[in-house]
Image (cartoon, rainbow, N blue to C red; front, side, top):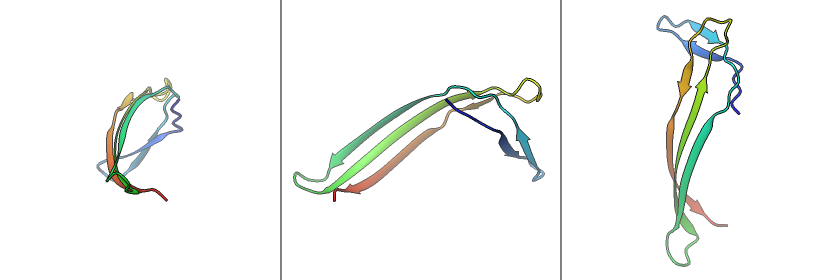
Length: 82
């Protein structure tokens, strides 16, 4: 469930515009892997990819346009087991 009280957009003129959106359900996918750096090493390498899909519909009385959010987010890192 995605809840948006309002999204603030910055225009070319530097003005701020707040648009209200209806609450909606979004979907996501998360894939990750952790690889140990050696047989008895306490260090590991990790990588992750996340994809989110949220279709936000403008409130009917606002006169705004719908907005689709679908970012692909990737991350890598190194971990240590305490």
